[in-house]
Length: 285
Image 1 (cartoon, one colour):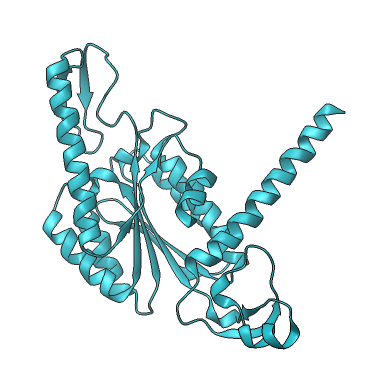
Image 2 (cartoon, helix red, strand yellow):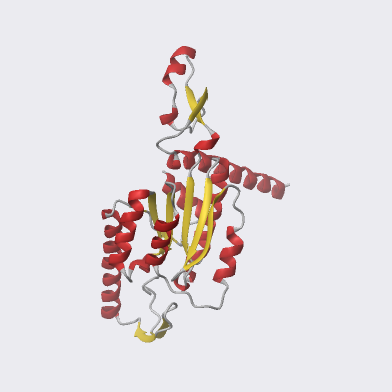
């Protein structure tokens, strides 16, 4: 009997989470030039920007405008599938968390009548799905790429150039990549980001892990760069050396984030200790 109760409780929690996330999603992605339909009665959680004060004054009941079906957004999810995204020491690897977020967003986009597209990239564009409704083929394509034996590097400039070429309609671009994706071709990346921002609404979600810079004291270890294959040794018990590495990493990370914000792009780091739902609640609020 207790098991049944717990099961019902879990189902209710999932439904509640989806319902709340759906309302927060609409607020976050509500386009500035929406096509408005007939007014309906206000429901808690509705976007206050859609309140129809004329109808409210006439009926004495708070009313909001509905959004017409043809006002949906084109949302492009640009996902880094390089080797560095397979790293993760908390709840999950970076790529698993990123794909969970993608899956949740694609479900929310259906309820909001939006079109979701995907660009999976490494040092080149691996796969491109133009924006569509009911996009359910993303997960298979991503699984196929991340289980490939090919060692995939990251080149953020390549995917930004691709997006600037193929996206004709104004879209909302969600750029999901490893924090160090800007370590190579930084000037080119910032230039391409500036062009992309001038044409589209862009947000950047860099993946971070608490142990990106090996905070754990493991003694002398051999480390391999997952993307280049370069191998080197380091003594993680050397507090002086590790402290310098951690400081350099932290400073460089802040510099990257500042560069992106200076272009006018909002940046929201994703930590592998969070779940997809936890992160999306933080993002939408």
